[in-house]
Each structure stands twice: as C-alpha cells, then as structure tokens.
Image (tube, rainbow over all chains, first blue to last red; front, side):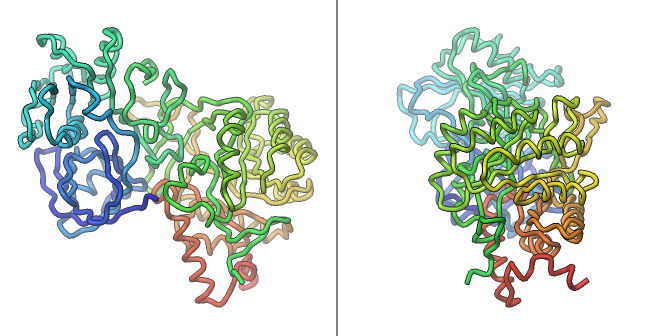
Length: 258
Length: 304
C-alpha cells in the first residue's frame, strides 16, 4: 500500500531568475518511481495554497531527490522559500511512466522549457547505454540562460539546443527549428513541453506515422485519479491525465479539444 | 463496545466517516492508499444511466481556502457499474453505498429499478443535478420538481435511500422535513456551494458552465449551520453532514451540531490517507472524553 512520505529539505537554490533547484531527502521511500511518473508535493507556506502540486523529479541519487521547478504561482513561490531542514510531505509514485528505454533502439527526446525535467530523469535512469541504442535530444528554451545543465549523464546523447523568444505566445518555435534540422531517425519520440509545442509535434508525427508519447500537463486537484478534474478527450474516451497518463500515445489525443 | 458505532435506519456503521461521492473515484483508486474496510461506508462517484463525458476543461479552480470544480458528472454509465464498479464493491467487507444522478425523474427511477438486482447497503440520491424538463434548474432548487422526484423514487427499490441536497436549498428545513415525510432514511446536507470565477485577462467566465461548485474549508461554517438548523427543527431522520471537513475537529463539530455521520470530500484530494487518521483521532477523542457517537450527536444543542 502507498503512503505519504515525509522529506527534509537538503538544499534550495536559484539556477536562473525563474528556475530553482530543490533537493529533498526522503529516507523512507518504499516504492520506486519510473520516468514519466510524477509526485504531488505539499506546497504550504506564506502564500495561501489549498492543493498539492505535481512535479517530476529531475534526478534521484540514493535518498536525495532533485526537483527543478519553474517559479509560476503561489505553490511554487512557497516551495522556493523552503530552507534546509524544513520538512515536506510527498505522494509518490503517481501516474503511468514512459515506455522503458529497453523497448526502443533509437529514441528522440523533445523538451521545451521545464519539459526537460522528466526527460532528464528518463536519461538519468539509463545506466548503461547499449551499443545499438542512439538517443537524440532536441531541447528548446526561450533564452539560452534558461537552459538546464545536462552534464553528468553517463553516456553520449546528441543534444541539439535551440533558444528563441521570437514567438513566445505560440510556443512552436522548437517545432519550426526541428523541421529545419537534418532528418533524425528514431523508433519512438518522447515529448514534454508547452501544450502548443506538443500539439505541433504530435500532429506532425501522427501524419508521418511515427510512434510518439507526450507527457501532458493540465491543472490537477488530487493527482490520484479520484476527482476527474484533469480529464481530457482521447480516441479511447475520456482519460484522466493524472492516473491514465500523464504519458499518452500522442496519436490517441484529441488535440482539437486541448 | 465500539464508541464510534452509529446508525442510519436499519444500517449499523462501525464509524461515521464516509468519503463524499466523487472525491475518491469509485473507491478502487483510494484502495491503493488505505484499507477501505476501515471506513464507515464506501460511497461511489455518482453514476448515471448513460455515459457522460462531463464538462470541457477547465474543470478546476483553486481558491485560497478551497477548490471550485465543474466536472459535470463524468462517468461511464450503467454498463461500467455492472462490469467494474459493483464487482469491486462486493469485494469489500464494509458498507457499500452508491450515489446516483439523473437529468429527469424517469432516469432516477430507471436507475433505482436497475439497482434492485444489485444488493447495496444504501443508495444516495444526488438531487443537485439539473432537471432537463425544467430548463436545467437543479431538482434541489425547485420544490415541485424535487417533490415529484421524491414521490417517484420512494416507490422503487427497498434499499436504504439517502437524499443529498444542497446547503443552498431553500427553505432548507422544510425540504428536510419533506424528505422525512416521504419516507427516506436520511438526508445528506450538503453538496458544493455555487460560485463563479471570472478570467480577467479574457474578461469572461472561467468555467464554460459559468457556475461551478465550491468545496473545502471555506464552506464548512455554512454547512455546519445548515446541519444545525435541520437538527434543531426536530427532524427525526439522521443527518449526514458534508462540507469542508479537513480533520477530526471538523467532524466533531458536525456530530455535536446534529450529524449522525459525515462525508469527507476535498480533504481526500490532498491526503488520501486523511480518513484513516480522522477515524483514529475520533476514537482517541471519545476515549479521552469518555463519550461515544450516540451521546455526541446533537449534544451542542442541549448545552446551548
């Protein structure tokens, strides 16, 4: 049976004016979390917040979980103010993971902004790169200084960076950049980023008949499959982003309604 | 003797803590976190005769002291109840309650009739649903519609039936007595409170249905007042208190105000193990105060 776990803040520091890195020690975790799954963090603090907030870990080493979080509203404001020694409650693991790396030989990862976080967690869990496996990452941020440092991965990943704020509203700059790249061969693509970006990629890959998975983000209340607050329309009926997802085969989503 | 025992009609409950319909799915989802058999009863999300897709996004809005939702009763209808929900409920040892919703009297009656073949401990009839025949006015806000529904529903299915009304139903006390006079076993007070959010960037309502339901600590004093008034009016059927319960303190307030048992809603969304803690803490309270549920129900009225 799952149970809420208590953690202690080890470190909290700003990486950029809008991103902070929160390290939490969770010594009593009994259930493993897989890339693509998420956790709900309690966000109590000065700002009045009622609900928990969903996050993917960036990396887990021993008992220390690292989150890279974008400062957005009251919940993340409270998290940004946590100090070493403070305690926090977490619900984990939640949702369905990405398909395992062993299932595909050539993987294309596409990350927009903080969408890099779950994809980095995916990469960090590939401990040994099989010789026949190739991984490419297309990673876009609005500005160069918003890029998260990806050094420290134990194997080679071809990373194609892009920074562009010319079309911030549409959030499809990364897709335009991708279209201009020399063709990348892949068996499956894993995508995480702003909705418009994922929509553009998913429509393109669906047309090209390419297997791809998106990690959806939508406001959740529970993150537990209880309330149906995060339901979206798919070709297989209504699905809860929190418990049926957040990872979905992009072809199944009803993008016109998103 | 278990000090937390309570009773609705012929149904004895081990404790008064029940999840509010729609806040723990059908129960299966919650079973990953707690042993459902420790609950006073398991209460499913509302089922409708036909599948309902629910409302478009956005469905949620967080306020400083609560949550607004506009889910629209998304569910897979009667076939899923038969194939998945009922088999799951029968695997449980605790009391099994099912919530039903409809958009017409006929739909409620149909559902109640179909449920006769599926033994349950209680059926909660959610009467906050829009009545299509009356232009979408919820049954609980239109006394003639509610009366018609109650008269039709009482004739079908001998199971213990609970009517769940809104704390905004007016006149609340008269409605509670009408439910009693029609022979129902209990009244649940209440449901979410209607509210509106405006998106100031788009300068239009945030929810597509405009009006959404407010839950959480903000509504607790209002729900408590409604329970207080219903009990004070001399209602003889049990009251189920529901609205903003976050901890055992809140439960004790509802019991002292006159509730026989309580439904816990939005608190489950934040801590799926909260009801276990509430049951444990209620036991501690009774032990420390050398009291029991039976003695506590409505006690605050006698000490006024």
